[in-house]
Image (cartoon, rainbow, N blue to C red; front, top):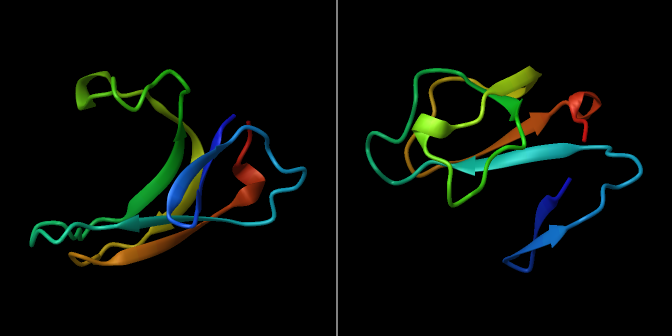
Length: 93
């Protein structure tokens, strides 16, 4: 598994998993478009490893699997950052 981290603003790939994962937060940001917010809840779940950043489109997206790792309640606004705490007991790999 490859973990992608940010260090001083630049993404860095870390090719090992810590012995014990004690916390995880997914930070997302909506764009500044007026339509960027959502009234629906966003659920974070795992996806199969059969995807690539440059080759994945909606039509060939990998299937999601497993339990919900975290969620963001509906009512998000445009141009806003949100932190979604993830249940580390459910993260494997």
